[in-house]
Length: 355
Image (cartoon, rainbow, N blue to C red; front, top):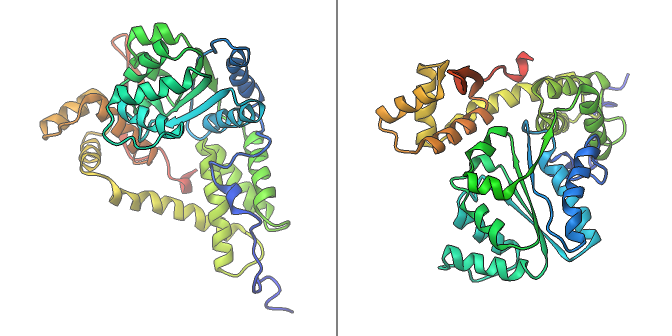
C-alpha cells in the first residue's frame, strides 16, 4: 500500500490553464449560441457595405452568454476589417452620458480628456467615428441613470449599429419615446441553457483548464447539476476553479466530491460575508426589505423615503437589482391593476447547498 500515490508532488498541479475558467474568457468556438451570433453578424453586415447597420436590444437572464456571444462576433469582425470600429461600454460604472462619452473617448485612443465637457467629448467621438463605421455595445443598460447619450449617437453618428444588452426586457420601456422611435431595434432573446448544453460548456472548459484525469466524474456531474439549477454559468465556473484550488491545498491529484461540497459551502459563506461590503443605502434598503418581506417595490421605496433615504426611485430599483444579484433578496413580477409590479422578499430563493 502506498500512502502517497494520490498526493501531488512538487511542481504537479491539477490545472492546465486557469484563465479559461474566468467568465470573461472567450473560447474560439462558442457552443450553442450559433443562431444568436448570426443575428449579431446580420445586424452588422450593412456596415461592411457602407450602409447604416441594424440596432439590437439583447435581453435574457444573467450568466447565459449574452456579452460573451456579442464580444465573440466583435472579435471576428475585427479580424475581417478595420473599417468598422467596435466600442464596448459597461454601464455598471459608466452610467451617465458624461461617463459614457468619456469611456468611448478612451476606447478610441483619445488622451488629455480631463476638464472636457460632455459635448466636447462627443465632438471627439463624432469626428472619429464618422470617418468610418461603428458597432457600439452598451452592456447592463438597466444600470443607466439617463439615456440622453443614445439620442445624441442616433442623431449624429452616420453609420453605426447599436447593441443594448440587459437582463430585463422592461428596460426598453424606460427609454423616452423619441429614443425608441429612432433606435427601432430588433429584439434578441437569449434563452437559458438546457442541462446538456451546460454540461457541454463546462466540459469544454474542463478540457482546456484541467489536466487529463483531474476530475472524478461524479463530482463534476454535481457541479453541472448546481450550475443548471441556478441557471448561471458563472456559478459552475467558480465551483470548478474553487474545487481545483481546494484539491491543490490538500495536495490531492483528483478533484472529488469532498472538494466540490466544500466549494459549494464556501460559495454560500461568501454571499453571507459579502454583506460587509454593502454601502449605507444598500444596508438600509436590505433592512427595510427584511422587515417588510413580500411587499411591492413601490411601498418599499416609500418606506425608504420615510426613513430618510434620498436616492431617486430609479436608483432605488438599481440598488434592489444589486441586492438580488448578490442573492440577498428575491423578486417576483405580478399583475397589479392591469399592470406589472415587483414583489421583493428577503433572502435568496435558495442557497447552493439547498439545490
